[in-house]
Amino acid sequence: MNRDKFFTMTPEERVKDINALLQKYDLKQIAKMIGIPYSTFTKEMRVGDFFFHQSDKRYYPFIRSEEEVQKRAKSEHENELELEFIRNNLNELKGLLQMYHHNTLLLLDEQIYSKNATFVTKSIKMNLEIYEEFSQFCEEHYRHLKTQDLIAQSLLDFMKKYRRDT
Image 1 (spheres, helix red, strand yellow):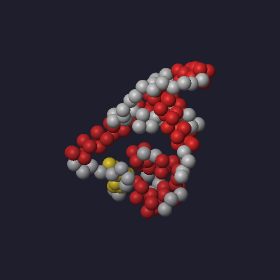
Image 2 (image 1 turned 180 degrees about the vertical axis):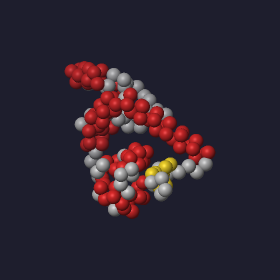
Image 3 (image 1 turned 90 degrees about the vertical axis):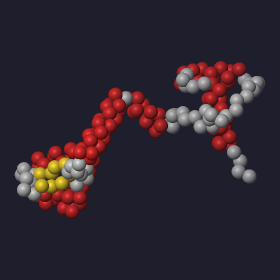
């Protein structure tokens, strides 16, 4: 186990691995093997409410009360649900991150869908080719959004980009 792995593991994983090492080594030797000061090692091992039992030479979870046990179990269950969600949606989440990093993730300004917004119908004259290209683009990439919302976002982006500070 190296230093990076030690600090990135969950407290439960860390205790399990350290308890295995404690069968052959003492705490100071393990801290030295990992490459961190002994005091840092023991402090980090207490994260997650674990304590070292000297006579058993192993770490155990510190249980305060039945309420704490229930709270810990609920927290672990919630963590497991979150991990399951991430596992089930990993490809979609990767796609969103990729879109974010390539600056292609479209986020509508909250003004567009505000509950307090007043809507009006306006008629504008526009180049037919540009409008058709825009409509096709919206259909291909953002069919889940209303064209009126995409036009509103375009107007906001235009104002933001070309605003002249006076």
